[in-house]
Length: 225
Image (tube, helix red, strand yellow):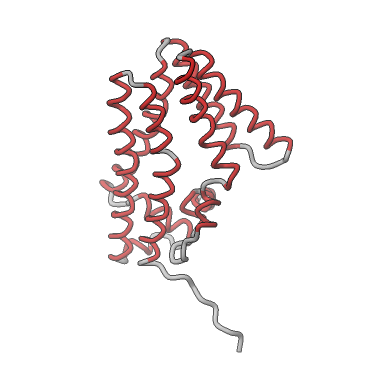
């Protein structure tokens, strides 16, 4: 079980730079899934914004992003590249589109995202209340450190700060997007979802790497005797 969690941590965005290593733009791009991952993350939401702004038609606005996401899965299957995240994206878009079509409200296309952000925020807060800040736990899984990090005050302090930083990410998303949802401002909601999506995630991830680097050090292997 521990190995499963450790493997999941290494596959997460945080795992692309081991704590103590110097982050790079290349590592950040990989954490975003590369150029393909960026396109797959941004294009469906962008297509919804463009199509809805032009047509004001709910059906076509939610179906076009879904079709695009399905095409991404097909391409990944054909090229034999990992497609689990792409399928998850299709399921998310499908559920969001279905809810919007059932209610007839374009803004309901974003409700699932609210719940996802709220769940992540709640998990982070609970981890701090339990005195096991989640970012510290993830870092320990990546480095196979076990629970030893909890005896290091500097690591614990940075783990709390990094966890608070991620709480800020999800709080900002909810704080900006929910008022737009309740006001029915679909155009602004779609636009801010894009702005607060990949760009904000990338920025918070980069800062987290830098914070972790202050308390972890890469292990250097000396020359052979």
